[in-house]
Image 1 (cartoon, one colour):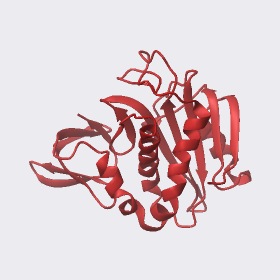
Image 2 (cartoon, one colour):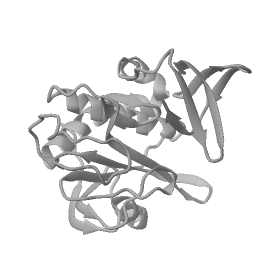
Image 3 (cartoon, one colour):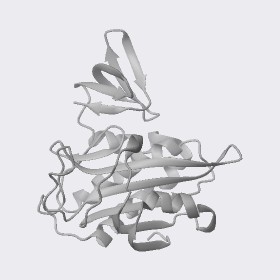
Image 4 (cartoon, one colour):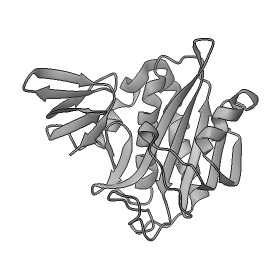
Length: 236
């Protein structure tokens, strides 16, 4: 059983912003979750629409070893998949950390490092999971909720499920990085051998997925040889 301080807010601009504002006064491993967010954010500063029925939370982490902090969202994506599997939902991961079911987005996340005197003071991971929504047509991309998939759970229970899996492997990822969970991640990564594109800003790179490396980076076989991708949006 993990020990963490949990703060529940009925409404907030963003759980991510809340922790960034208050991190110095809060304990390591504090979790804040909200019923709704008025200014939720996804990766690349995209708007995250936060309607009633979704699970919106952020986790404050102050690891002693920050070398592998970039891999913590990959651990969180794996943890969401494992939690979904408890309810007979077979989710998979679209690199690096989107969680999908049959090509529809179930969960997205955002990781931010807060710097203090040129050192990482903390890492904050924000997560949005579609739990009980009945209509996700406003999202702007194919999306699905656990309720639509026939899974019977509630936000608090599913948060607990996710975090049990996350804390289970958190020490090993902090110590050894992505390699600690790579095998389990790859079991839920169906894109190896498929031709995809990765968009990062104005540039797009296309190729066949060779692997997700031991560092957690995406390796593509392209016409110009193998390319290692550190950040970007996968387009299938």
